Length: 256
Image 1: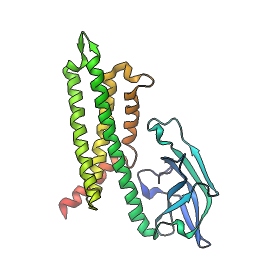
Image 2 (image 1 turned 60 degrees about the vertical axis):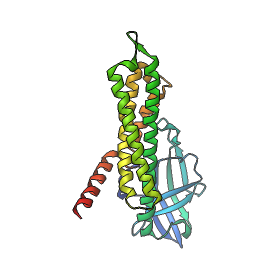
Image 3 (image 1 turned 120 degrees about the vertical axis):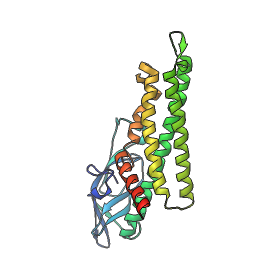
Image 4 (image 1 turned 180 degrees about the vertical axis):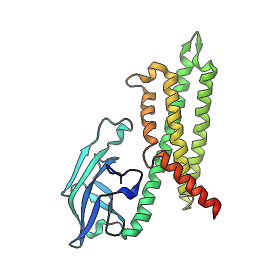
C-alpha cells in the first residue's frame, strides 16, 4: 500500500489500475514493502476509476522492477524494497473481488492484521528489553553495588514488567475478538498497537540507558531494540493516526 507520497493515509494512493483489453494496466511506485526483496507475488492496492482495488501481481510480470532498500534505521531484517510498475498488464482475475468490496474488506483486513503483528512484535521488544536489562543490572556494579539494587534502576525494570503484562493482555483481548469474528477487534487492535509500540519505544530507550555506553556499542542487542521500537511507532498506521482513530471510535461509541 505505501507509496513515496502515501503512508498511513490510504486515500493518498496514486498508483493506478486502468481497465484495458478485458484486463488491467497498472502504473505506479510502492515503497517500504516488507519482504519485497524476496516475494514472488505482490498484493498491490491501486486506484481504479471508481475506488481502490487490490491486485495480485506476480514478480516476474513484465514492467515490474524491484529495488532493495538497505540501511534502514530499524527492522533491517524486513528485506524492504521499492517496487515500480510500468505499464504492467494483468488479466481480469488479478483483481480480488469487486473493486468497492476490495477497498473495504481486503484493505481493512490487511491493515488490521498488520497492526496486530506490530502490537505483538512491540510486546516482544518490551520483553526482550526487560530480560536484557535485568540480566545486565544484576551483574553490572556501580560503587560496589549491583545496578539492580539502585532504586532508579528498579523503577525502570518495574515499569517494563507492568507494561509487558498490560500489552500482553491487550493483544490477547484483540486476538480473542478476531477468533470470534467480532468487529470490536478493530478498536481492540488499534489500542493494542498504540499501547505496545509506545511502550516498546519508551522501554527500549530505558534499556539503552541502563546499559550505558555498552548499550550504544556496535552489535548491542538493546541498540537494535531501540532502532526497531522507533519503527513500530510508525508502521501500519503512525501512532498519531492511531490516537485520532481511537478517539473518533470512542466518540462514536459514547454518542450513539
